[in-house]
Length: 249
Image 1 (spheres, one colour):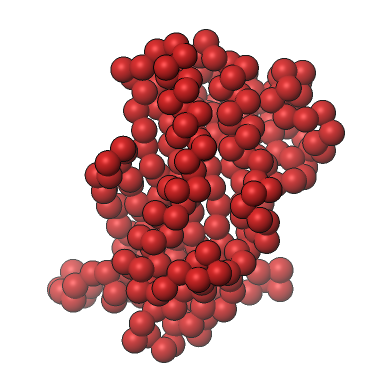
Image 2 (image 1 turned 45 degrees about the horizontal axis):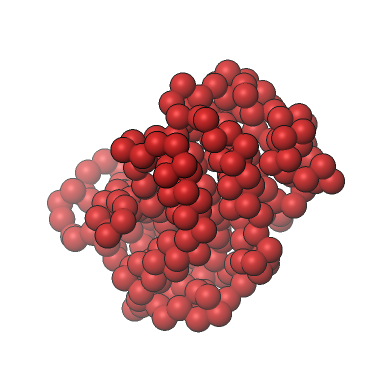
């Protein structure tokens, strides 16, 4: 739904690639141990279908575990958090599986002490012709001129953390310069917009909490549209039209 993003009045910063989009649903669980995430758990409990092929050997570690599938779904566990990740790539949003897997996990693990849930979209906007296009976008478009720039040997690399209070949750937005490594070994400058719609569940229990979480997950598309509107219209000042995203999971 969003177009290639272009920076107004910056003719040297022209996007070369389609923008990259990724979506994550994260569950905050009290006393959650990452070693509980295993391929056997996911398949034997019916959280993921038995015919899903692994993209690589699963990692199980007390500091962090990961199970990745060839269809682009990645499940990542860290202390007190489990996340379900998928890139949009050229997929139709109706074919994305990460939200279905998150819902099944909640249904199968309904007794877990869920404390919060986050819907976290990412948009990476690539640029060409300027080696530091992402850094320059932040410095020149989002920050005021000042003596803070004239210190040291290089122009400083800045990032922004913004906090928005919405009706149902808090939206945290991080803006950082990024680099994209291409197959031909070329490196393209980019800017990363990473958002997180954070919902708290501490006052909810039992079936009420489960239903609330399922409702939040079912609304991930609405959060994505809000995020796209914020990034493209408020920061990049570009209308949102149909586009295909590019993401290599």
